[in-house]
Image (cartoon, rainbow over all chains, first blue to last red; front, side, top):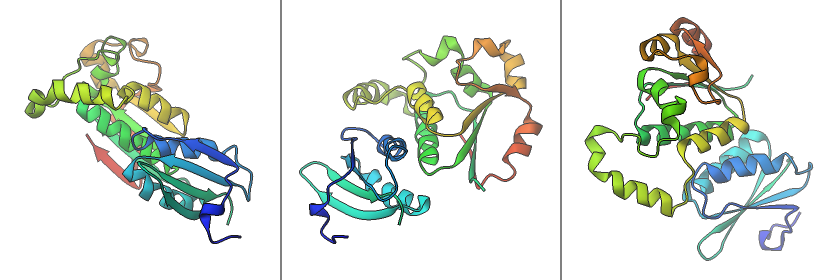
Amino acid sequence: MTSDISLLKADKIVDARGMSCPGPLLAAKKAMTEVKPGQVLEVKSSDAGTLRDLPLWANKMGYAFLGILEESGYTRIFVRKGK
Amino acid sequence: MTEKMSVVLFSGSVDKLIGTTILVGGAVGMDFDVDIFLQMWGVHAFTKAQANNENLPLSKEFEQYGPAITSRLKELKMPSWVEMLRQARSSGNVKIHACSTAMSLWGLKKEDLIDIVDDVMGAGEFVERSKDAKETYFV
């Protein structure tokens, strides 16, 4: 597994930019049902709370939180299904 | 065992309905089961007559901010509290119960309430259902 998340290619991308909390979290939860074990979900979000919610959520659900990338006006959050 | 959150929604003012809805959405996201008990003004807000009313009252002490908040919510394209609650409910296990005493008080039948209300319940049963909730709120 690469440690440089900017090289990661997500298997599924959810664009939740403009959504307020908890919209991106619910969108991530829904999207994860369509992600296979070992695959990576990317969530684009402009909500500050989501940045802290998603790592907690990933941990709780037994997913691997891979990290975030800051873009202009939003962040890209990466989570892998399964450890 | 699934974690559970329990909310008593007594208020029917729109700011508190929005706040509650956000909390419930967060709980569903974090995989909590949620039970909501509607009392008094909470039941009133969930009637078909009121739920889609865009002019539900704000908490009394903040009434003067009403127009500003309404236009800001529109700018942010925030869905209505009913829509947000509907979304949370379809993303997890959320049960909404209406207090039987409030139903008699308002002279309501179950069919007078919007479809996301699951049933009419007594306080005793709700307290029983809530006894293993990890978090309990009164709004």
